[in-house]
Length: 604
Image (cartoon, rainbow, N blue to C red):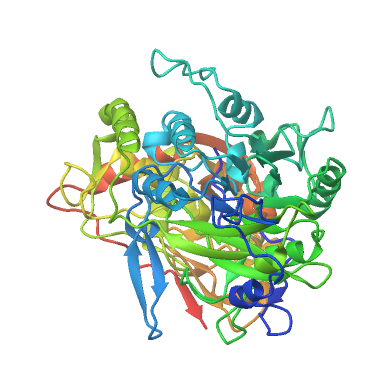
């Protein structure tokens, strides 16, 4: 697996969109524009109550994205969403867990005979131990029980390579670890769509490019793509032998193919996303007021996808939005994303016009809903979690350290980022006493360490399962030499090049300090003269021994200079490194306190 960053991988698509009254209509205004000659049939019905088939049929589209194998409720901030209140204040709500997601989806489908469920990629990968330990077979089983109809691939579907992705689709026991029970893994009941992922040998998509949902005389096509930049956020081994094509060109190509087949209603599932103006899942994206709108790569993508596509389900950025963005003809089109980790789901109404076979776009309505934990747990999901937890328990419940309080992963520099970097520096010095510092990519840190007990281990105890959830990729911790000039360039690459619009701030080990001046632009945001190691300025001509994971060592996340290091030495996996550090530096009576996160001075 590769430690990819979910601070968005940006290419050329960085245009901001601010909702305006002229360009973006609200859902209410859109609904009012439905032809007056006919109204939608009641959900789940196709008639007018007099034995006649209505011209219009409401189709319920339920969607979510970026589950990442979070079968159990995520902990800390990863398990909460922010809700905007009527008085303008906000509150946080505990959310997520497939036991609750299943209940919410099943309740939402009630009374809707015409209902389809789709996902926007990253269903697996970077998963907690209960799924990741078993190569995400548990998550595929859960998605089958959720009655997922279709999903696009995301970048994390390639963490273990295309052959493993094919196994998740088609079934069969793992080639190395074999079967985990007496029953052969049957694979996904739903299709993974990978329209823009081609085999270098054949030039054809490695999985189906599209899929058509049919219910009586209603049919809707789904095209699935991942971000073209997937090779930049996945290890080279994971995408070996594959080509990733432009999202817009690919979707437009297959939209024409679907139209030739008589499919006029089309939804694009895109594992690429945007950045909403608000952190509240229920903000009014289309109000046109301050704090509305969405920016990021999905804006430019949406503006260029053919008007033949009626709605876009997106993901990758782990954000929540239900917006409209004008298509190339200037007409508003729904674009949604449901945060991550199963905390939200999106409910979109697509009104199908039987006369044209197309969606009446002016009637489309969409909203995100919280997967609250105040509903009954789905018994079949509880049983599934129990089954896999029983298999994982001997490994997962083992204590590996002790902490005195939550160690969070949020912020430009995070306490958990500092802790992991310090652990890698300590391990680097074991391999080579000349090791000077360590760098950790923030996207490789998948969850916080929480003080409250997750099970019976007791408060403050860090279990192997919790450590696995933090660092699930099985990356190795490597050493390599960089010149001082290269080290300075690496730090500048955090805020320049492909990372200019969405900085990826590396987490740094103790002793390395510098100033990040956000009032400046581009590479100048890293103040060169402020970069010091143990109080001494970096010498451009000197050689520094640097510890980092193999993803960074390969130049991942836009850090091309890290790919130019010399004198490499490959170490053990990063979770073992974290485990060793926690065990060596904490006891029940002397736990580790959260680091101060004061190595980077931020000027705003």
